[in-house]
Length: 566
Image (cartoon, rainbow, N blue to C red; front, top):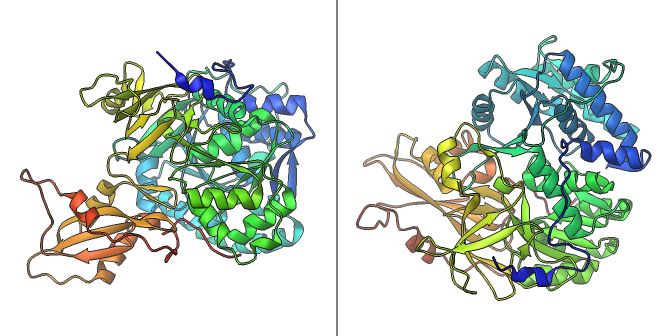
């Protein structure tokens, strides 16, 4: 097939790369062999070298094996960005098990559903989530718990404060009901310890996502796919051992996992870890650690641009900023590039292909509104409405792709896997087109996906919860434009005849059953919803009723943990 985008590649980026057939943990171990004393993680003043991170991951792997974890077992992580996440991630792989990262912001019901679906053997978390972990253990008695201490990875003043807090939080779990990560890390390393020799084609990571259909399901990613994506990202960003990446995007997400961790490990660079996005923390971390790369979503940069004391901070250490998950406006791009001197590189990815699979060139031509061009070894086609490939530039159709990073499939869902991957091509569900240079543009979102501050919200999931309320007869949700969060969720609700139901009552019901950013920011009660002749809700008619977003943001990203000030 023709690949016009190859002519747009930066010098030094090859159209095809070599991908070693090795287990994913080799990214850490090989860099530790090359430069054992180079900083690997930086976390609130605590620096761990590659030698140290490797040794700790080996010890934790040995501890997991001693506790009966077997190859293929699913081990879940309910952790913020921290050295513990990095160490546990590679330790699980070294034990031959499968990493199952979870969203700490998720509703407990959602967490229990995912853990049950995956038949997870162990959950590694911190005292902050001890109450959640205790409830999950009660719901799933076969799920074992391991609690680690974040204070270990902090400077002395923070360590003292965190130790006090964590000692109180541990009280949610009775003594003897959980394993201590610190004890696992103290497990004597057997002589001639060797990590489990995983086959590259085997599952390494199980990520739960709405996927291309809107249904929450497990996406199985192989060692080979994750290794390949790390190589693609390193080549695209020209990452080297001297680079430091500011990792505030959550590592439990494919975007943060691959860009902020795996690709950096491959390059032998350093990861500056922040547990959440806070404008003050980000600006102080840039000034202190001088990162060269920063990954984020447009909402973050809108918040940074609004910081009243932005001029106090020197951002010129930044060379490149990877931006994804939501459209990047020209205003945000131009303003932040002028302020930092870095290039904001808009891209596109999906968990079914690990993460990013195309982006604007790091140094080459950027086209505003485009998600860029395919990475090495990624092929993109536009499937016309007739189901046949349409190579004509500018013609709309579904974006389908083929890549060495494609998922193994949906966990225990071969039916959905067959629908998503056809003849080796992944159907993205996104509608878009390619221009004459091979740059890709998305014109319609994946089905009716809503993106709130970079977080995916599938209307179907919210609507199912709405309709479970006994006084709701009908309901639908849409995304409405928001200048700050990109979009927010609005619900249209029809009450049962004669029933009384207030907005506050309905919101309380939803907050108990949904992660906070999925809860509608606005609720409008109606007597009926617009429908087609065959009964489908006319979402487009509801969207067309919406006023244009104000020029100034009027709300924060709902539940996304984003703050304007330090």
